[in-house]
Image: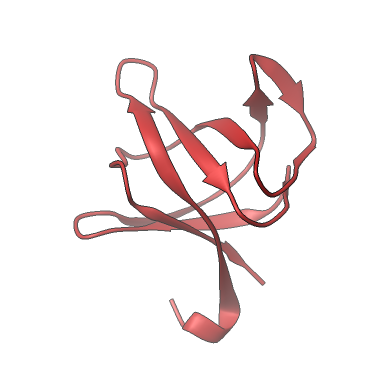
Length: 86
């Protein structure tokens, strides 16, 4: 991933392995349809956001400062960084 093609939007704060859901604390806006890249010491994958939740409610977009729940395609770890592809 070239750094100029992506911007850091948050980090993983929790991962529920049984249901494969990550909690992401956002520092930039994010919406359904965006492509994200999750990177960490042992993590590196990208996926398109097809749905996300805040407090168990489906939302189309989230703002900085909010924490969202997101079903992820691979295992993630706390402190992994999340980038949005431009």
